[in-house]
Image 1 (cartoon, rainbow, N blue to C red):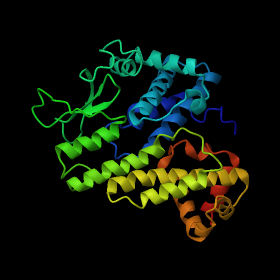
Image 2: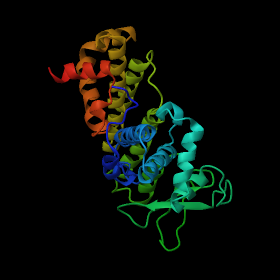
Image 3: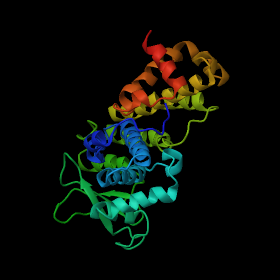
Length: 322
C-alpha cells in the first residue's frame, strides 16, 4: 500500500484524532511510545488526506494542531525532532502549520513563543516562569517553564504565593520526579524517598534512549543498542523505572526485528553478526515477545495494522500465526 494514501476519512479523524484524546502531558506514567506513534500516524494520515482531497477548514485546523503537538511533545520530552525526517513535510511548511495553530490558541502561542523568540517574557530569565499546569493528585504543585527553557516546579508552601525550586530540568518528567521527591517522598510514583531517588536516576538512563525516538534505527548497532538497554533495565529497582525501560526495550526489540525483516536475516543471524551470539538462545524468544508487545501497547491502536511495510508485516504475521 502507498504510505501516502490516507487510511481514514475526514469524519473519522475529526472524531478520533483530537490531541486531547491522544496525549496526556501531565502524566509521565503514560508510556511515551504510543502517544508519539499515534500523534505521528494521525498527522501523516490527515496530511495525506489534505494533499489528495479538498479538505475542509476543520480538518486543516486539526492537522495544524497535530503539527503543533509534535513540536510540543518534542520540547516536553527533550527529543531531537526534524519535521521533514519524521513527516516528510518540508520544515518551513511544517512550521507554517505550527504557527497557524498557535495563532488560534493563546496558551499554545505562549508555549511556542517561549521556545522561540520569547516575545512575551524576559529572554533567558530564570525568574520569569510560564505556568504550564498543576499535578493531577496535588493541585498545589505547579509546573512551569523559565526563560532558559527549563521545566520548574513549586516548593511546598502557600499555593497563593508559590515559591519555585531553583533547579531546572530539560524535560517535564525529570521535573515531575524531582517535585514528588521534594513534596511527598512517601507517595506519588514511589513508596519511599529512596525509591524516588532511584526513579530519578533510572529515568535519566532511559531518557538517553527516549531522546533518540525520532532517529532512524541504525542497522549496525540495533542489536548492540538493545542489549545495552536490557543491561541498564536490569539495574532498575523501582516500578517507575521498570515501566519506562519496558517501553524503551519493546521499541528497540521492534527495531531489531524490523531490520531483520528488511535484510532477510533471522534473529540468530542478527545477534551473531553483532557479536552477541552467546545470548541467542535466551534472547530470540524474548525479543519476539517484546516486539509484539510494542505493537500491542506502543503503536497507534487504530492505524498500526495497516501501517507496516510488507516485509515487516509478513514477519509479524508469521510469528502471530505460530
